[in-house]
Image 1: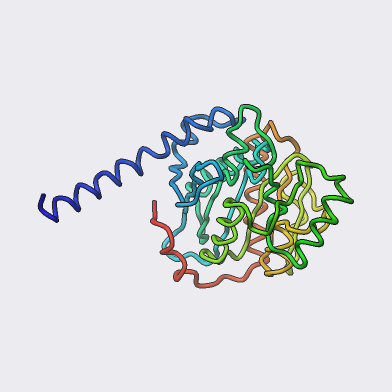
Image 2: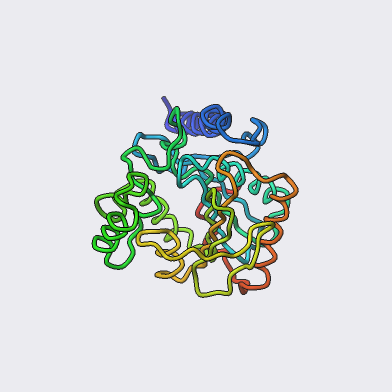
Length: 282
């Protein structure tokens, strides 16, 4: 076969696989998510990041940005697989970003923990039973996470930090993605405490919709500790009121607008064009 024809065939197969991928992704998990239609999931056009979970499930990602972005924002949800509403809200916000990205390069990871979410009965941990939100490399990790897990949680298996920092492929992917993408804000969506948490050097938002600021503390191995305290990247942690129900459409929109308003007021615009070639534009 002629080299040019072979290259065109390989490219065509790649395009077909890429375009079919959101179909597979939505059939795999959209039905588990509250308030998510198949149409909403398909419109998200999620694509493989190249990273995989413990059980080999691909971690999906979507980038949205205008021609001259001035801010990079990383949105990550379903770090805990049983917090189904977090993935739903991420998909609704992704749709809002598609309609009006403003001057922001958004990178959405709606399901960081596909193994936990895709279980017959979703659970918090990944397939090795590790709480991904305790697996990030914070100071004195071995000692501090052991104290936290043994003394503060009574060896609660739902909060096991793992054997070493970044022992889990899902946590390593997010850790590496922070270096690749260099976000100026990280939004981490969780449930079900119904509050707004924040870690970082900036003034935090006081509310997003009906969620009011209530900083719950700094935990060893957490994303807020690693990103907000150690690296100085503001980490906005959204704790939805329910893991199984989303807020109303109007409430999700209000949270979205409040988030964007806080970013506009708090974070200085920067030239982010150098990072905008890390993912293919939609």
